[in-house]
Length: 207
Length: 207
Length: 207
Image 1 (tube, each protein chain N blue to C red):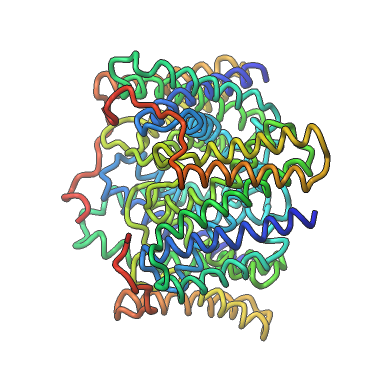
Image 2: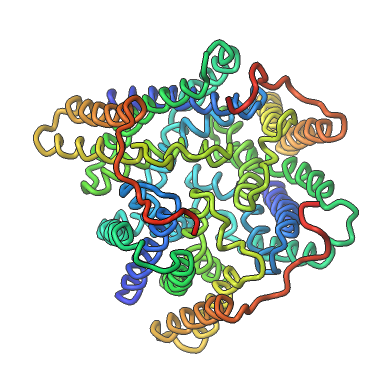
């Protein structure tokens, strides 16, 4: 329970930073920063909780998550200009956020004793949907759908790793660490070294 | 209860008018008008009800909300050409809709004795998400995110005002009036006089 | 119950094929295909189940739906290049998906003894929202909103037909067949013969 709580908080914090960075690219005011930061930070976990019918939803049960997200928005509002490339920072923070949100989703579903395919899906939902909402609302090309990058795939592999480890041991720490490690390794490898799966390209697009 | 019911109805009616106006800009047919009108009209309140686990959702409990939204769509379908500037009309109707939807959200959360940060958020969710869905689906630039306008900020200030008044008095009428007044004053001031908060602009965007 | 289960499965299968086709147009990798296929396949039914507070949601109760959607994604990933026009195939598969998803929504709401306006809306929600999510996420022009085509209208007429038949007979087979038939006839007629309702066109758009 505590490990999950920490993961949820870390995921909210880092996703909020990425949301605020996207808000800076859209030149919003400070309340707009907080709005996009909160949407990104709690979006994936909220969908997870609604799908699993957890009541109350995690940030309604504990509004400190909202305070965390707003603090992150403020931090970025006053410091984003210090960074050389906000987009590069966004990409790497987003990779970290993914690597904590996926185990947060997996751990929640495991704690509810959901069947294993649902565990995998909840890892992907929690990891991917907050960033997807951020990008759809701000009209950015969704990171989730960038051609030739591992993103959903990283979330999927991390969730699979967690399920595999969970069949061997019930130590939550091992399960969640394996999940975060695999997710981040694949996403970071994709960003740094261009790791990818073959994409569909048999025809010119939009034909 | 009655004040909230009236607010929900007024919010559905006015948001439906804005949805139909956006549908007229997208040149849809009459069923498309009704679809976008309903999505806009009940979108924010539906998310509020799902998040708060209210069952049944307000328009399922009382389908007359849907009839109201469809009537608004029909009205706009046959009269939109009479207006000088549909976009101007859209902006001002949307400001009214915001100013009734925010207190509808705040009042609902207060009636459920939610913690105060959640009350503020439900005001913003109910006020902002219907219009956001309308704009994302119809591929308009979301009003919520227009640079240098008070929108989310107006909803936030109105919700804060409601919470402040609720600490002084439990008279629902005062709370909801303060909420609507502050929300509309800020949004209308932004539309009419260009009131705004400083936006983030340290760099060229999308760098 | 069995007819509904079959309809849900057929709807998941066909919508997953359309999702994978859109993923092929966006040149995603195989996991991206599966992601968009699942989103499209279960999106509408998931919103239906959340709105009606059905627990657990249909694909959580029975993860075989997810397996079906992933199999459809794989099939398209390896065969999409064989088709003359992927867009034409997409349009016609989507019309079939609509014609099975609308009765799936209507039947579910009828089985829960929802009031008739809600039955109509659940038909439209189940039929239209999966495809709408697919198109919004992949940044395609939503089929739902294509000017001068019957789409929401077909779903609406099919749902109305189901409600009308349900007032005469309680035979599920008749109700669902009428619903599917009317929906598909109108959508296919619109695709093949250009059937349409008059659209709003009193002014140049986006004025």
